[in-house]
Image 1 (cartoon, rainbow, N blue to C red):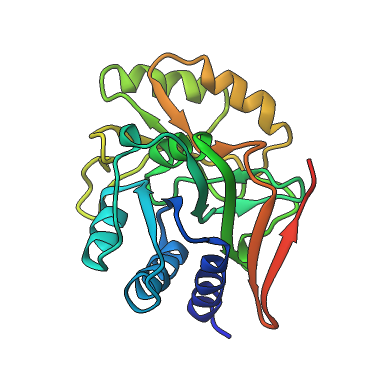
Image 2 (cartoon, rainbow, N blue to C red):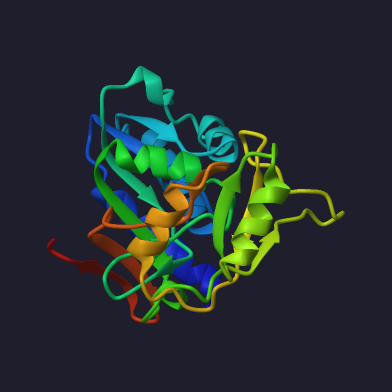
Length: 228
């Protein structure tokens, strides 16, 4: 199967984890797109009763068109399960997210979920994080000074730009700086340092949040569980 077929297979499979009357977090990205499409189908044709919170404007718009009942995060008590994609997942179930620029909302929803499930194609499973650039969402105010600080720490920052060369804007109208690290040997140490840098809204290291991953392989979706 090609990559899109792998993504579609895991997207469809992941909806099996959604039970009637659940509050569900809907992630963002190309794999999640197929999950939302399948969830919409089951809501319409199988009368699956759910309410959902989204992690981006584009997922909200997709779900709304499909007739999936939606709530804002502040309107619900707790999320039963959040299903999202990832850009990299290592052998310890740590991940990088934010290739789509939605990682601040994604992490906020994940932290308010009883359970988090990631859905990926097999290319996203890696021995060590870091080949995929690590996104950080930053406040435009003083961002050039923050950029210099990141440079001084050898973190190889680059501002994310649109196709016409303008700064990429998140849903919150912030900028993204991608750190081209190659390898992250100590993700917890890096996450702690980034957490303490004024001007960083959120980074794309998702650590100790997930213990179930559905991976698209040539032999079909594979469910991998890790007991923490």
